[in-house]
Image (cartoon, rainbow, N blue to C red; front, side, top):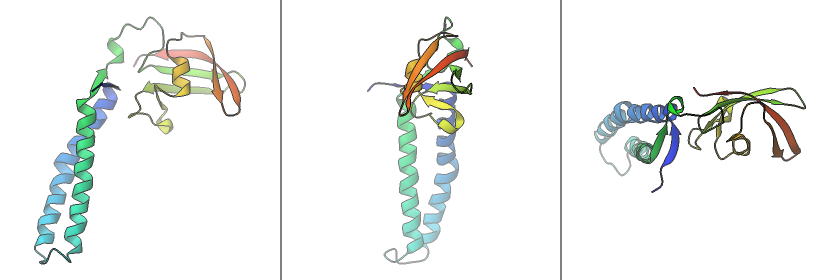
Length: 158
């Protein structure tokens, strides 16, 4: 299977969530199941069924995180020779040349993307237009309302 690119920060975040689920949530649910079994008949034991349902949900989440980690290729942007161009993991500041509004984004994998945190997918229209470009380059991004003209102000490798 092909590995998915992930930033070192994204890898650490998934690892932290995985450890939390395995070491805090999983034992708590197991204790809830043990406690619920003591109530007797399992067929009509709503506490037991709720705990088992929660266990199934958490185990699926653990499996999903383990899969992501196993099939991820960590990219440490600070160790890549970049030659002043935008690459995966770059933090880019651009300005809308019509509105003069500045935007700052970090280009990450799909799993890490979160527009509220200014993390955009490498496959997003903005990132696809930015990859490979240099500072002061003018780019055009197609939107439902037409093309928007941006200028690249700053590229960071953090």
